[in-house]
Length: 465
Image (cartoon, rainbow, N blue to C red; front, side, top):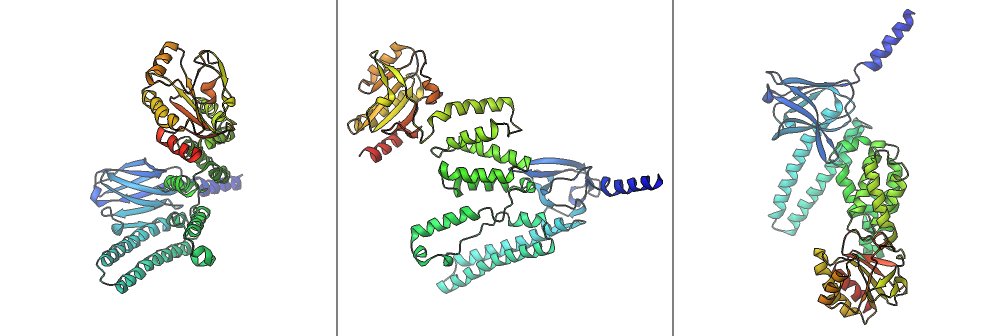
């Protein structure tokens, strides 16, 4: 029995104690002040711990569980703060007689200490770079400028050599991942065929494809620790909005592959899935709402989004309902609607090269301007070239409708309504906001939507002239 008790005590000593964090700070310039330990999480900073320093500026941040590894701040006040990287070793002493890295010393954590050394190195390298830039501006000859450019390139080599040194001295450390995270490899064009090197268009495409395929080479987006840095969200923003080719069919495979990679980490999976569904629904790229529908159906409405509230799911369901029938490339739903004269006309039977489905309300502030401009600047110019407008009055007051048509003399396009909303046109063509605009080709496939008058005119110029 004694041996068993002794064994239990050993286990507790090994695994139960010393598993929290204990960071003693010594900040002589902040004696008797309250300081905070704050952490980066995505694009925000949050306070984690607070301590009141004694008359010597000494205090201890302490907790029973380990801190998430990442980039932290010691906050003295709004104008006085400095960064510290917290890795696996979380019991150490930090001294700083100011807020500069050159005055900071860390004892007890090799990784945190190496981060301070790196900051000192980086600041010196930055000063060299600024001096070389100054010299370049005042260089008197091409030869002098070339020599300075060589020195500037050498600074990049120094940086990478320093990264390699850290990786050698602290293999597998978070610090190394942190330092190289934003390094994106650059295509060596000498490896390309001569015909590509000498063709600007082909070379531009080669560079674009290379960046797309290698953008994440040095950034481990599956590592939760990267969430606790300022890098993850800006990196994701750049990738989604600038690196990927701006088209639904091109973006979707990369987004889904990304989510497959991170699904094993619940916190990253939650953030990135939320990010992509919001980015897709708010995107200015034509047709990207199709990605929203896909993500909604494949991740949210099937139960994978464990974090989603019933209220948020209801909003997503509503948006899917109003988007799924009018995605770019889909055949628009047919509408059998009553004309102003009491006859019935089918949208799919409209014989035109281009049919614009317009949904409007006469008293909508935007509609009052948009609809007459569309009639005058687009319809009148292109009605004899193959354009027809299926103009849906979305309300139920025929007198109001009559006044609006008469005021702007808009009798020669197809004026229709659905007083009892039996056609569900507001769902099929998302009539929640007016004016609603959907452009259909001869086969009634949706080729564009939500365009302004200028964009519509440009599209008609391209399609009908």
